[in-house]
Length: 170
Image (tube, rainbow, N blue to C red; front, side, top):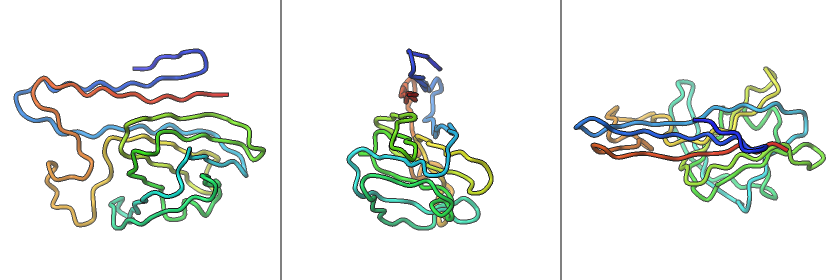
């Protein structure tokens, strides 16, 4: 569901298992925002995190630590040369998109989302996607059993999954 509260859009997910069996699922967003040369993302109080890398089939094939310079990622054509930035860090609770003059453009807040994708297509269109997720791409060496999939969510009979994220525009 979507709710507009002044300059903040609140996007809510509710999933309920009405079956007798376990229900496996993943859920996530894909909002895209217009950017200009020199814009950057600011991560609040994050100096380092773990990043996953995707192969040409969209499968996770490695992970490594990523260090931030002053909690920032400058949005340029090089940052996405290896596809999306995919994070698994519950300490990342929000991202602020700022212009090259350090003015706030918008803030995406996503407390308790275990995964985050940040993506763009360099030289194709001037946008960046900030994607809060409950789930992530499969791994290259996956056994292809959904119950073993990294990040898969599980609901038992009559359980409810309820989370939200927001986009605030300045």
